[in-house]
View (cartoon, rainbow, N blue to C red):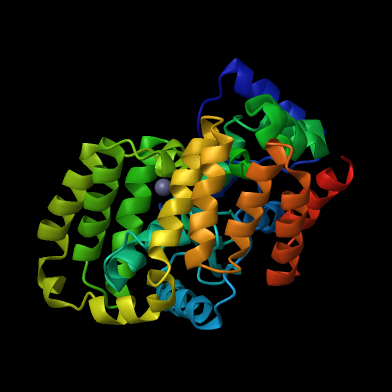
Length: 363
Ligand SMILES: [Zn+2]
């Protein structure tokens, strides 16, 4: 068990008072005993509470049923290889166009359309999902919570989403729900990343993939991080990237998995499976450019990018909500309202268009 600092000790007391069970649990991956303030049931509960909000702020899960099934099949192939095969895993593609992937502690894992377009084969996708599975299996979010980062928020109770949101992101963007509730996602340490990469490689190899997919993924991430791609900011804020991660994957491949290098990477199957997304790749890129312009408060230019995107990907829910946001901040309320109505029609189950519509009707 870790020795607690005074501050951590106070947090632990606060948590116990708040009804959290303080215990030492053995880590499913290392088998070592560690301080755990969060039980498995609480991990699942937190996931249920917070992941729907995140998926929704990422414009909901993809409506293309074949693509939805595809990511589930890749994820499910690795589940039996994990240390916690009985967790209630869910694998999603979300409509967001920025580059990211994330996991909630109960097993909800999502990749954005933006990141899928940057992967080149199924082995890279398996590496990405394997890495997120690594975070879930090593209980990194629970560990972070236990170590006090979010304890004050948890002790504060239901204020979690609203409080952390407004403190971190002021201004109209947050009010309109334009910035995802990324603030709720865990920011992993470098040690967490190292362990998740290691586990990810183990899981993907056991599922029959070529471990070179992990090296490919690291190579891609390293390039993005060096070019400081604005669309990948949140990805690197939550999953710190380093040259070391790339180098380690190369070394591990050679030392540990040399024999499995001949395993398939499934390039064609990947490209076929995301064909419908590739068809609108230029629209996704325009939306990314639009988002960067929005962040610089160049609203008219952003609107023009979104409009061009919608010419390519007609009725794209994310595109419609984004263009409505850019029109709303320019006080073009009628145009915004028209696009909100189209967005509601395009994805009636999703809340963000409704939410924005509420603001427009107040004008
Ligand atoms: Zn990570």
